[in-house]
Image (tube, rainbow over all chains, first blue to last red; front, side, top):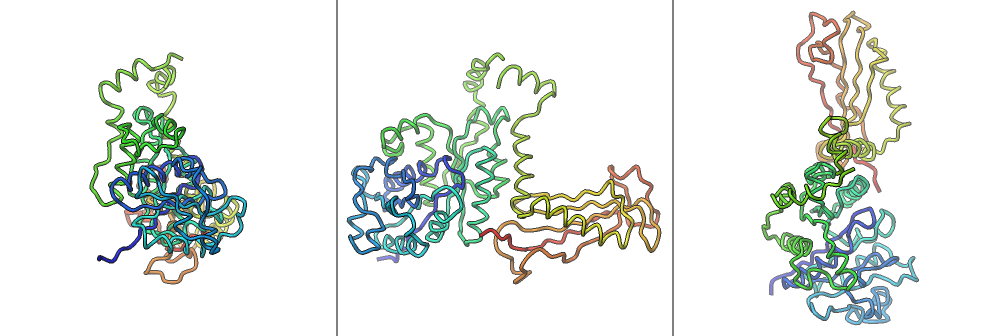
Length: 272
Length: 161
């Protein structure tokens, strides 16, 4: 048996609402479908939502908190996904008891997961306070997700600085909610603008896609249904690149510059 | 983008908002990364001027001290036009002081254990006024042609935690 090392990957953004949890859910499913034993750890236990996006909200009985306290076994707290048995969710803690968790607790939790999983995705809470510090203490590598907006990029920059001081390596970037049309019109920060400013390698590019909302409504991540929507493809590609596969990144300039895109833009251009 | 925006852009009345966004971000990140508030920056500016003024007479109206950022490296760039050196009169020369602060991560090997920013080789170099911006001012004869504002890269760790 080859010695196995679990990758503990933090998914963070600084700013809230840019798509951390959506990425965690979709990436978790995509990895599991590729045969990777994956655990998703909801470190945002104050306002946890990962269970909801995965459609597992009714199946949570215990959390890592009870496991650490010795009141249940790890297997009891892990919620296995029915359609994707390679994926399990572990909520970090009970929202009613926020103060218990410390960096050592998070490290103990990922330590417990290590023997049974190849990848642990840690869904980081927004902000850079205690919740972030707890989550980062358990990770070795990180994915920073941001959108091409000034506020999100600024917060991402702050988080990258913190990840550097914690010695997290590698740190890779996922650019979310890209609108190729706006980029082509130079009304949105370009992909190069963002990667230049943040100086991170790009792991994925996700275009704005209404299907993401639909899938969230249903509690079925896009990558689960084998959907061919642009975002589903983008999330799957993130998973493949994370596994070391060389998947070329789409060129956003071309996404919005085809003849069809040009025509539809011409038609859609609003008059005043 | 509305038609009005398109027309304005074509007429050069309005620039692309992405350009504005990029510039605003670069400025705000330079400040974020250096952890310097405007007050501290102003204080530093005064102290730099005080030191430099001991040696040369500076054109106070043209002084520019600002933060610039590129590739996660933030530099403090001070542009101090010199009227004349106090020891030997050299009218119309310009001094450029640059010192950098690495905004990302721990100190690197070549400067072990340095707690924070520190002026290592703060260069005060006379330039010949040959560049476009300085062309109006008379250049002193005996000065070397290339400005070569020396950059002292400092690997001070940003105190982020």
